[in-house]
Image 1 (cartoon, rainbow, N blue to C red):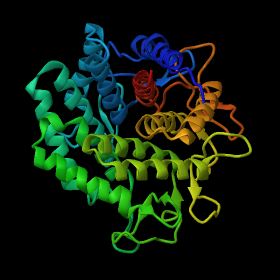
Image 2: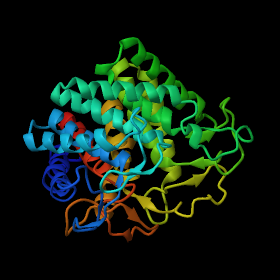
Image 3: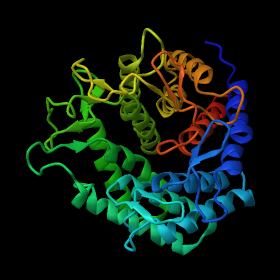
Image 4: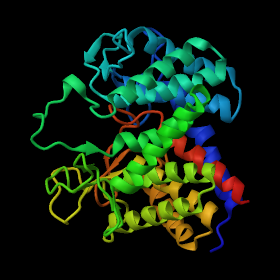
Length: 389
């Protein structure tokens, strides 16, 4: 296959720096109360002012990351610190347990039940410390990471709505995120803790949740790793698995572990083939392991982050292994993604399509979509393509 890697790299770079980052710079900053607006319509107009802590933290991380990895632009650093000031003042309960959502002014709306607020706060302050050298940011990142490790076996703690002991399950999301988070803040942690966290996360992702007979990864398993024949136990989220596989590829590259790399590429391809909609194109949001009707009514929607994360995984897999199948799939997913999610008239990308690929919601940001997957994905693909030139 003769893709023009140089031209493709330029396409991703220009989209990131000329259309996506400027959208958030222009529209998301709340000059009056601090932090960011994330509920933005197609043109960038604010349609709701509630603030979701994990999206606030993701935006802090994104602008810190751009400053550290692309260009040391003062406005990017100020954008990051603008969000960080709001988070430090309003985002947690005083003991660095991070709330889920706040009013525009910063009053808490939803208790700190969601450990992913903590995960992204850790990423945000770890990256911001790299940009500034401010030890306060380092301490916040380290203390929050310690809290995560304490809570990892019971992430929701006192806020868990399930009856204890009836059907205990553990979820894939946290070990998956720890694969990435451990690298994000390794500059702040003892080497032994980094390696231990990585070892445990790789084991969970690649041995416990992975089902070798099917080649797929389950979203939830029993505490001993066995299968639960229930809605939750049969749940597959192809995008989660595919995103996790590029985290694993990064760890395999770091460890020079060829076997782990090839296993990650195989799982990624198996999941993509299973999750691809052969009738309308694109990747399903949720599926049932046994082919039953999923409980999620939005199961057949096509989501922005699923497709962007898939592009990252495919191009990284090709870079590391030279597997031509990955390149063929990259071209196929690239064409679908740019044809359906990229907005030809306004900046940033749509998030939600129906099964046929038509825009369901014209928003560019909301409760779940913020300044994260699109810019991170464009950056990752751009950088990987440049290494292929």
